Length: 433
Ligand SMILES: Cc1cc2nc3c(=O)[nH]c(=O)nc-3n(C[C@H](O)[C@H](O)[C@H](O)COP(=O)(O)OP(=O)(O)OC[C@H]3O[C@@H](n4cnc5c(N)ncnc54)[C@H](O)[C@@H]3O)c2cc1C
Image (cartoon, rainbow, N blue to C red):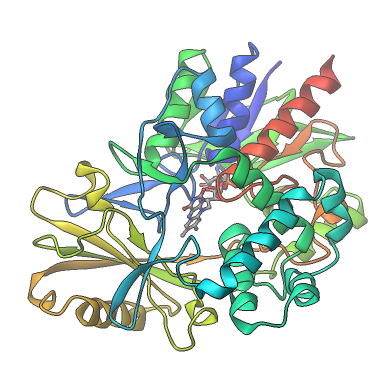
């Protein structure tokens, strides 16, 4: 069977890995010159920068969860250094842990623990009955305490990238149940940047005779009846053509309409509607310092609208150079600051924040580099977009499938595309048996 995987994000690579493990020889086409999609790292001025803040799920020293299981099966485990505390933030001149109950007043902690226990007790299948209710609506039935409601807002953002008034309670419960069962915390690659994970998946695929080609942009897909009959891609200025048995599409689902328009109108309408459902951009600004200033092993992070936790506060710092020695040259330190602005004002806000948090850091700034990281359209888990409403891994064309974080699947962060990849490969194999 000739399987073409379009895109080398975590979803595309996990699908290609699972197929390789079952004896197929998939071909992955990636338009960029590097793999990993959004979970990637770039060399910049002697440092290795991740595409924004990234940590992975930690399990006994390795990447955990579905991604970790696939890496283990490929015999390519990725060693992680545990982040402890897992997440911290800077506010009012103090760096403090975000995850855990430290920010919740002691008298409210037992209440919160009871809510968490209630969520864990909901049978997994029953969580779908909460899909059309928001996290906020569910939480309001339990409490009207503003601090606890803020906690739900923040944890909803961390879990599924949507605020509590937009996020589906069912999706939130599933993600929390999965995250609790699979992870012993967060970790960062002990060697290299976050792209180590994608690179290891590629090594595994190639060791099983699959192929990953970078700098290969798919430009057209032809449809013949109910099937994708041809995939055309450009590599080194030349157009190449493949006749595939199966195509797996990893970019955001709505972008399939740039290549194929011959879908039933109902499907096209649904996919088109995914575009525009985002929660707004934030900018992740790296500052390279000529000497270490941040004295914690993990990070200070903010969701793009951090003011949801504490009005007026917009800060997130991460010092990856203390996690993996390769990401910044010896003696230097990288600090990552996320701010809810774009353009040049983002960089100046980040630098101001750094100077406020670490007085004296100003003269040590070597350079500043920023990435704008919009939340991908269709990713935010709006009520009505989960469960039965979401785009499944299969499509109206019999040999076209979808994977990635805009597709049906469950899990926090990279786990979502990995889960979709598992569902996709299961469907393909069921169809061909
Ligand atoms: C700032 C930021 C921080 C995050 N932090 C975390 C975190 O800490 N932990 C966590 O687990 N997750 C985190 N995430 C989420 C995680 O990065 C994503 O969920 C995941 O990487 C998405 O993978 P994917 O496979 O869905 O798609 P993508 O990564 O988007 O992959 C799609 C791929 O398709 C390629 N492509 C597109 N068009 C074509 C074409 N025409 N031809 C060939 N190739 C094409 C793209 O170049 C890309 O490589 C974060 C995301 C962001 C943006």
